[in-house]
Each structure stands twice: as C-alpha cells, then as structure tokens.
Image (cartoon, rainbow, N blue to C red):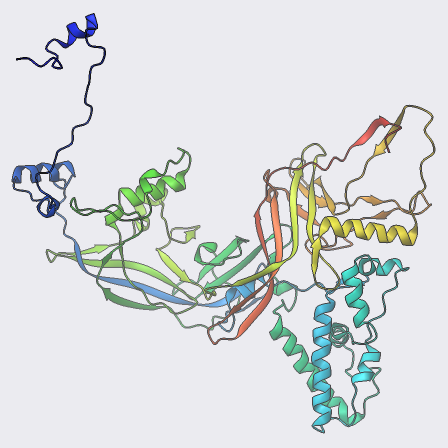
Length: 609
C-alpha cells in the first residue's frame, strides 16, 4: 500500500498543485548509534590512498630534495661606534654613558622670551638647591657667614606689575600671577645666578663675600651647575643640538672603524620619538673627521641550532594539527596599492615556515656585518649562504627587508644602538599644529598648547584671549569706528586669533620656482594711535625660533595633511640605574587642511559688528 504522503511523480504534482506543500531537505545529519565519541574523535585512517591524495592536495609532493637545516655557523664582523655628530656640528667621541635618545633629542629649556622670564619652576628649584648648599657650608664651618639673604637680594624675582606691559604675559593668567607673586621677594632667581656666571661674572658680585669664602663659593657654584646638568640634560651649545628648525626633525650621524674604510651611518630625518636601528642609513662618506679612538673591527664565528620562526596567526604545516592562533591573517583585505600589508600577508601565509631565528649577542653601540652563514642540513650537506642583495649581478635589483638602507652596495649589516628599552613621556609642554590654508594661500602655525611663565601649560586659545584682554586693560582698547552712514562698508582685512601664527611662501634665493615658508606676523591694534600697532609674537619655543630675525620652514615638511609637533619632558633609566631627564620634540601627521577665515578687501554689512 502506497503512503498518501509519498510523492511518486514530483513534476506532475508540482504542475497540478495536488499537494499544497512539498518537503525538501537541504541538510542531512547522521544519527550516532552510541553515546560515546571516543573512537570517532580518534580520526582513524585506514585508506593509504586517501592519505596520499591529501598530501598531493596540500602540495607536499612538490619538493626540491632539500633537507631541513640542522646546524648553522654564522660569520660576522663587528665594529664599534666611536664617533658621533649632531646634525652638522662638531664631531665628538661616541659615549655609552647616556642613552642615545638623551644625546639626540635633548632640547634647551627656554628661560626667556624677549624681556620676559620663563620657567619659574626651574628657577625656583635651582634657588632652593643653592640655599641648601649655602646653609650646609655655613653650618659645617666652610663659610664665615650665611649669604642666603645676600644672594636673594642680589638675584631677586620682582613683583609682577599688572599695569606694566612687560609683565602682561604673567599677570594675564591667574595661575601664573599667583605663583610668581608668591615667589617674588622671597626666593632668589637661581637661573639668573647661573647665567651671570656663564657670562663671566664672579660668584661674589654684589654679595659682599669675604675673600676667604670666594674659592669655596666658586667650587659650590661649579657643583650647582653640574647638579642642574644631571637633573635636566640640555645641549651644551648650538653644535651639539641635533634639532633642525627648518625641517622640524633631528639629524645625527655615527661612525665606526670598518677596516679599509670607516662605516658612517646617518639619520637624516628622525622625528618619531622612538630611536632604533631603522632610523639610520649607511652613507658613502669616508668617515667623520676625528681620530678613531675605538677598537678595530673584529671577525668571529658563532654556531647555533636553527629554530623555526613562530608567530601569532601562522598557518600550521601539518594536516592533522588544529590552529589555535588568535590572529587571522586570512581575514585581512588590503588594497592593491598597500604594499606593506601585502608583503606582511604574503610572508605570513606563503613563506611562514621558511624563516629561522637564532640568538646573536652583540656589544652595545656596535654594527655587525654578516659575511655569510654555513648551513648543514639533515643529509650532512654544507651550504654557504650569502645575502641576496650582496650579489653583484643583482645590483640593479637590490631589495631587502630588516636591513639598514645603504647609498652604495654594502654587506648586510645590523646596528645595535645604545637606546633605552622604555622611555616615560610627560604631558606635552608645547604643541603646535602646522596646517595649510589654501583660501589664504599660506600655512598657519596654531599654538594649541602654550607654556606659561610658571612652567605649566595652557591651551593656546585661552592664553591668547587672556593675554589680549590684559594688554587691552593696560594700553586701552582701539577707538570705536564711527556710526555707519551707508548700509555697506569696505574692510581692508579681518583678524584671526592670536595663537594663529602665519607662514607665507617666499622664493628660495636664486630660484624662481622653489619656495619655502617664512614666519610672518599679524598686527595687534590697541590704544588710540592708529599707527601704533604691535606684531603678534608666538609664545612657544618652536615658533619663536631665531627671533627677531627671519625663520623659515621647508615647504615639503608641511604636507596637505599638516604636521603636529610636540615638546615634552622625557625620563628613562640607563644601564647603571642612573635616571636621565630631557626635553624632547616629536612630530606626528596632522589632521588635514584648515581655514583661518582671513580675508582682504571685503564689502561687509555696516550693521554687523
């Protein structure tokens, strides 16, 4: 007997619509015959032909009869860096007494901006240290008198005058006014004392010290200068400053004895804030001009057992091994022009098991040149391997990764710089955004974060507004325009906030095409004199460079995306545990173009004020 639910002729039933619903299955699942899955999870295979087909499917039959490396011996030549040069300054001996970041990145502390004193926090620290030294020397009997009050009277901190235009940068901001006012006539200016000594002044000028105390005071002042140099590292002079103002980045070079010719490596554009070997490029220079004091290069060989490189997301090379990595390289969808991502994915998915690693001990502050590697495989064959980029036949097609860039053909090398493993970065003290303004045809340096005389920082917009209000109270506001007699009026130029510093394009000397950016100034109209306007000066040390002379920035340094430059204190500990603190700068990519709203020769509504 045929079941009524059984459909014998499916096409006829569908055409005549005899059955209102037809059941179909798109998934079939097996029903287990037992409650235990022990045997099923063993994945038993009894068909050898099936295993061979899977090996063929995985490409395991495509081989070149090469054995796996079992032992390797590397031959390398090590040269120690012995010379250092900041930018194009004086060549000096390379030292391991401090981290290379400290030597390269340190920037001088701005203690003055024109006639205005800055960094009163550091001035107070130096004064406190000097007073403690004077008291300890007097209590120990090394000084015949206590000169603390005499030095405070000789190097005073004046009380800020809210009615004086020169004190407007202090009195305009309540927090700075309170701090400087609390220090005035109570604390000496320690930095003023050190500047007096650097200018050739005597340690007892205006103090009235006894003749027997002068040598003691001179020795104490020398220790005070050493204490400040150890507290905050600063460049000794302009030749030791690696910062290039027109490029907004650091430049430095290192040299090592390299046998027949010295090895010179330079960092032409370091601005990232993290110094490592990839910041350097080998140049074709003969060497830095300084007699080499370091040891000659040494050649050595080191044996090791090659170990396969393992990383997160690496595909397993065996069929019956489950991948439990957290990184899914197969889910990356790079664009066709994203070369870096394409190389990463190809390395991770195609050549994952072709890389081997081994430990290599190198002296700090040295460069190792790899001559070659002798590899012994499991068949007992020894093969001499050199870097592919070292072959002369491929000189025009030389390409490498994880290798220092070189201007001329050179052996594969690795530099181990004396850099800190971890650097603590403080809050930004200064922050300047360089943006392009196509409507105004200029570049603006926006002071987003400005240091106050007290040593703290404040947003540039607030600083500009408070400073202008203080000057307006002192000098007086500009006269109000007369009542309009027409519905429209002619406006020569509008204004922008004072923390926007303009940079205008100018031609390079001797060139009609190339341009660079020159710092300009916006006028500040105050008082009743129409011709008595002032130039708005920048408040950050980054933009006050070379004042009152001209300051230029290379046009290519400010891209369409702009640039963001920050200055902050940094701190780290070196090999012996000694802490190092310095003021360093870093440059980041900006957030695109901007518009200041600056316009000239406009017709505006007279009723709009």
